[in-house]
Image (cartoon, rainbow, N blue to C red; front, side, top):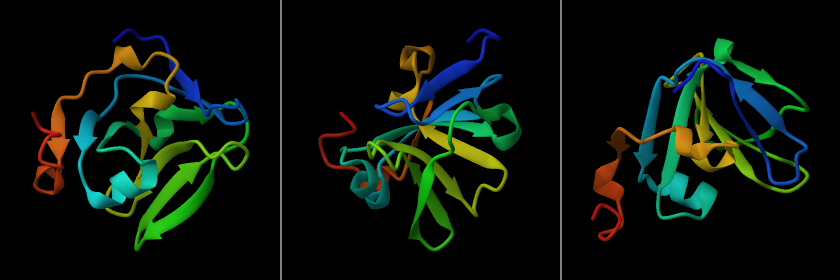
Length: 122
């Protein structure tokens, strides 16, 4: 990854962001909560420190999906964008698909593999 900021946003463009520096992690999450929140078989998250993220337009709306968990989304188009949780204070996790250049990131870990759909880890 280069030192150029990573940019991204929602489908309609109402929510835009930039993240600087290397991510803390890139991970595939197989938990049931992520599946429900995104509609996917699993979610790929790219985590940054809050200090490395700047909102370029309006900030996402949030939904408290479970105790201590806030999921960000665009109130205009519904695009799921972020995860924030009490378990990881000071971090914001973006779904990989909301980046303008998601191919800049490669998952290097798996979370909640015990919840994975049988075919999802093949």
